[in-house]
Amino acid sequence: MIANREMKSLKEDCGNLYYEIMKVKTLEASHLKGGLKCLIILQVEERLPSKFTIFGGFCKPGATLKFNFDDDFLWGVSTSAHQIEGNNTNSDWWKFEAEGKIKNGDRSGKACNSSELYHQDIELAKALNVNAFRFSVEWAKVEPREGEFDQEVLHRYADEVIYMQKNGIEPMVTLHHFTNPLWIAEFGGWESKRTIAFFLRYVQMILDTIGSVKYFITINEPNVYALFGYLQGYWPPEIKNRKKMKKVLANMALAHSKVYDLIHSKIPDAKVSTAINTAIFRSKTSSPLDLIMTRIVNYQYNFSFLDSVFYGKTHSPVGKITLPGGIKLDFIGLNYYTRFLVGFGFTPKISFGDLPKTEMGYEIYPQGIKNIIEIVWKRYKIPIIITENGVADGEDKIRPEYIMKTLESLSIAVSEGVKLKGYFHWSLMDNFEWLDGFGPRFGLYHTDFRTFKRTLRKSGELYSKICSNQL
Ligand code: FCB
Image 1 (spheres, protein in one colour):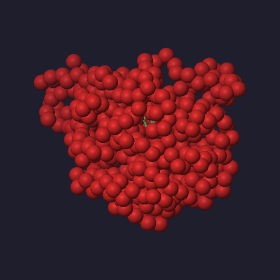
Image 2 (cartoon, helix red, strand yellow):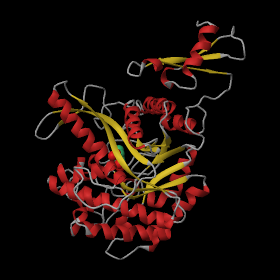
Image 3 (cartoon, protein in one colour):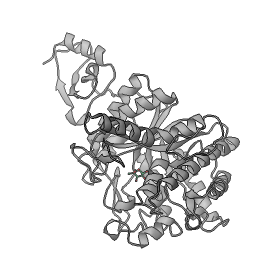
Image 4 (cartoon, helix red, strand yellow):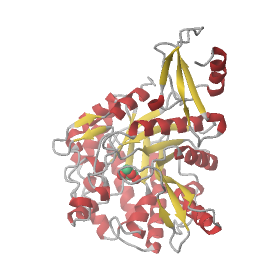
């Protein structure tokens, strides 16, 4: 048993930093004075800097333990329209799915049927004690044909916002999450500059109907959209052409900047960002060529888009385009899932390493998020919000630990000075996972895709405790 004196110094060393729930042990320590009744032990994590190698905490009976995030921290869940709503019949993805391009021949179909069940979804989010909900509005439904706006759909989104607010939940609205109306795709999609004007008109329509929203994500993961759709060609429009990818990124950077200004002209105190997909990139070996390649990949993937809209000047591989000056980010929305290894090649050789994997085949590397937010904070000095983070794990074996490790890593970064304003878990419930169809399950709730019943997972229970400060 650890002596009282040692525990005191542990407490001083570790303060409020916290622990991994899977390994918590509560020891009865009746000889302790000063009301301390139990010691909660202790995780050893070799990869962290040495001063944080041991985490400890103390509590009085019935006391609560917290991560050291701000009181107004946004605790959220994240979703996207195409993945949960169902019947996105006028979109490019609907067509792509009908062509049999998805794993096991899956099609989004009715997905989670959330266009009918959204009230229930918001209630499920509330049951998790979250105070924020990131969701997307679907352009292909709002404007199924050029210039034809569907009032019913617009009003449903307005109702979604109202219902969240009634339930004490801050909405964060994503305006573009991978999918496009088919008519946009057919005349050239994001390769064409005309799409920017159409996008602005659609956003204007959303702003006119959706009510008082404060948080906006303009475009979700432009880096992933451009890479998969225009360089690797896995996603619609299945193009493999670097020049076109650069053009798409340029048009998206300009669209982001213009939408940023448009939102602010209507809602001066709005908080607007893109949500960039970030990852840890590690060199496969210490050879100079691998190291250089890793630096290039890291910059191009994680930072080139953010640099472009931050400095008002495009950075390759974002193609050349004139951007309006000024910083077009009020916070930095970051999505983080995993780590990659990089080797040199004419096209970089990117693979996963040897760590255990999730259902998506991603390496389980939650602690990488600390490194990402530290670098992003140092670079831009703008508050950060984690707009997505999660794990494909139908059996819910990995997720509880993954959540705790992630939050612990974020907590340490915050204690070292990073300004982090929120964390949105991907996802509220299992949903349609793009090319992988209904296989990978990311939900805090399990979804039965036949009956649309949602069932809380253990990790959901854990998250609800975290969000209500019971952990
Ligand atoms: C992100 C996407 C999101 C979801 C998660 C698992 O890259 O933004 O829609 O598919 O991955």
